[in-house]
Image (cartoon, rainbow, N blue to C red; front, side):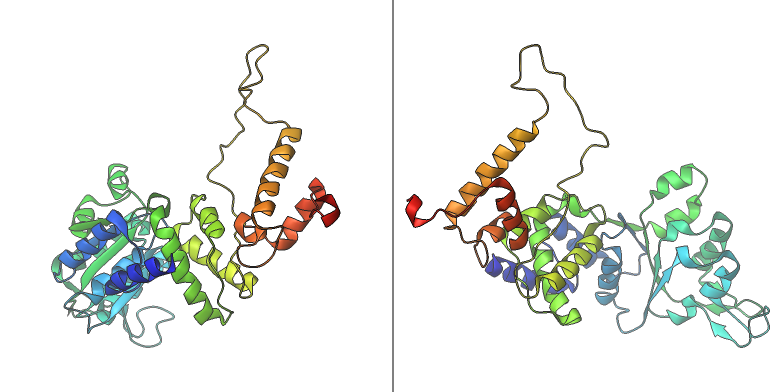
Length: 341
């Protein structure tokens, strides 16, 4: 597995921080290759944590503007009263706290790329101000009368469905079309699970460098645990989970305490037919313990009753050795002695 990951990482390194493989990854990187050298505005669509900012960085890095700044603006964090100042700057005395001249984000990004993150959060009454600078390529600082030009390429990102926002009257249709010249849709991590082993390996290496912890081991059991989770927080959540597990691993195998899939909001009970227990829709506590004991016995015999270490029972099951020992004691499982053989 490590050899395969290394090969794919070398392939993906042409796109910097975007790590992946398969059709979805190929489609995104191909779209970046096509549109990056142009000055077309790009709208990146995807769920929170799916990697939209990484795509913005690679669009800039592969553009003709890469020698100029990439400036990020989190549109959701700007108070309404400071919107114009944040985007276009202000002159001294324009308002009470304006004690000196200040450049805005458009001026800071001149010649480069302006990344408008969470663009769908801009209040409707302020969207016309953004539209004007996109149409006319000029603006004025707050409190100033002279116009300035803005040579910027816009990359916007949102987790909202802007078409629905337009239909609901919460987003200007003309602004939508200005931003949506070239859309790139980022699939959620649950739809590209083939990338999870590769991303987990990559994030483990990052954790060692950033946190100074000992290099952990990513086991097959650990990968299975990651694959059986639906990742509502997407790549950002995976990154956090790997970092936490790397700290706890202390150079050993990575363990992940994650729920399996997305359970239904309420348990589904199916009433069995009279006299039929084969498809009851539930399992008794006694049956659960029997199955767990049988499964543990199989794994322990397979590993020669070795609990700890590489390829030990705990690693194969994806649990900590202390957890496994506690379960064995609870289920009455003991290593057979020579006298029992």
